[in-house]
Image (tube, rainbow, N blue to C red; front, top):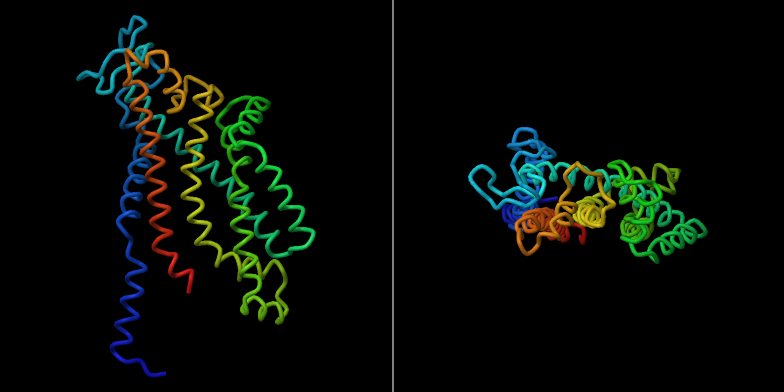
Length: 289
């Protein structure tokens, strides 16, 4: 086969365009990196103990000052320190819950899409049953029964969030299972386990990466919602959702108590969404070929 210089340049330009991150992806990556750096460096970045009273509050929040840049809450705890440590808790719950979500959703989707028939019917009806319950209410019921803890929260969020992943993976698996390369491998004697692990899963992986990034923002929001309702990580562990719940009493007199953790949740969710949609926008043409 003869390649001209022009065809080589055209091919190289296409590859470089697909590999080059777009502005949305870069912005999301920077925001996620900042969140991760804050979570990892919490012991060194937080100026005070997040659970200790470091100011004389006399039962009233103190506004931002030089000693306390984001103010203190009604118990005299530094809001900045609690915000920084809350990043670690939120990121731990978000990533761990997403790992549980992917483990369940990918397995269910692959099995349903590859085997079809009765297996597909049973697994998809189970998925439909889970989808019939509101996610937040189902999570609240599980947490209430199991009692709130860090392990409970991440497991519960993963158990109620896998349905979307399963449906998307199933649809992609159904399409891939009919492709020629899968049919050829099956005709050569490849078993179901080899076909799934070697031929189907690697082709579904880019889609799984996108769902993992986008799903992490959903798990962060669900964790914040549970914490706001008093069903999140138990106190005195700082949590962004619980910080907002504790600030509701002082919303008019000390709005900064709710504004700062609200902005933290907003920026974390926005960062993961920008990263996920940016990656999807860059890789979508490649998957369509």
